[in-house]
Structure formats: C-alpha cells, structure tokens
Image (tube, rainbow, N blue to C red; front, side):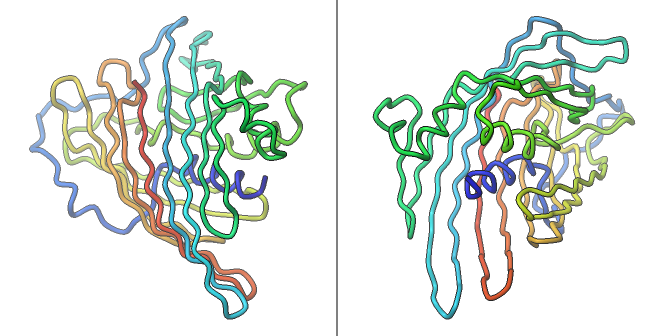
Length: 271
C-alpha cells in the first residue's frame, strides 16, 4: 500500500515544480482582468480522470532496477451545498481504478475486471470503488477539509486521509483579478508515509479564448524529493472547472543507500 500511497501523493501535487516557464508564452493582455473562481451550483455533477505514467530508475546496493507504471483513476463529483462564505461541499466517489506495473513488481489491475480483485492488493483497490467522501473546497479551488466514512476499509481510509490534504484541480486561483501574463505563487507541504515534500509553484494566466482559460504552472520541489515540472491546465472560464491538463515531472529521491530517479507524466480530464 505504500507504493500506491506514493502514487496518489504525487497526483495530489499537481501544482507542479520547475524553475522557469519560458516555453509557456502568454497572449497579449486583454486590458480586462478577470477573477478566476469556481462557479458551481448545488446539484452540479462532474467527472475527474487522472492518468499517471511513470518511469523510475532505482539504484540500491550497487544494483540498478527499472520500473514503469500506469495508473488511471476516475471519480464522480457532486456539489452538495454552498455555504454563505461561498465554500463548496463536494461529494467524491471512486468510479474506476486501473494500474499496470512492470519491473521487479509486476501487476495488472482493472477494477472493472472481477477476476483482478481476487489478489490481496486487488482486493484493497477494488474496495475503493463506490466509496465516497466529502471535500470542503474554497472558491479558489483549495481544499479546506474533507470527511471519510467511518466504515470505509481502514487501509483505504488512511490513504485518502493522507493524500487529500492538499487536493486541487491542477492549480489554485489567486484572490486578485488577473490578465494574460499575470502570475501568482502557491506553496504546499505534505507528509505521506515519511515522504515530506514542499512544493513552491508559479502559476501564469496564458490565454483566454473561446470560453477556455489556459494556465501555465512551474515550480520547485524540495524535501524528501527534489525535482522540477512544467505543465498546462485548461479551465472552463464560466464554471472554473477543469477541462484538461498535462503535467511533466522529473523527481529524485535519496534515502540511505538508495536513489530513485523518476520521470512522470500526468494527464487530467474534467469532461
């Protein structure tokens, strides 16, 4: 479960890390700054699909091992209520999870295949399907709190509680109005299974065209892991909901006599 926890942990760190965004050129300013915000109403139902592909090089005790992984998770989300402060209470339900792993550990799991659920790890992963929890989210897209059902599988409950601490839809919005070319910073620190990471990111509004707002993200990762990443997030301008996104990361983790170098590509869809 620690491997799975680490995967989910990286997914929650979608704000990215990298040192420059020179390749992300912004369109000329419109002269009419906008307020980026979630604009949903009770009863709205959304989907969020996250696909993660990773290639890792693991060096330990003079030996080198390569590992690749593909993880796809789909969640259904429903807005339950909005309070007076404009904070959203969102119900999230796991619809599907699949995982392919190649290397020292080989695994092929798909929650839609009943046969895959018979293995020990498949049994744990399968138990997440249909499970729901609620998220309290601000208008800027930052998680303010969450609640997991008490009767949920204890292992699954623990992973959700750890990984949902800083859940976002790829980025968070600034409190000020912004125009093309404007940037804002964000910082997240999280600790999962002894892996403590601080992620300082830079977000830039790149374009506003045909009802879609494009945001470039880059930053630096420090702590138990160091690294860089860069990506683009596309937001529906009217609702503030994620349309799509793609993040590329390069991470390095060293502990005792072990070193893990990992390249990660994350693709997001809110359709």
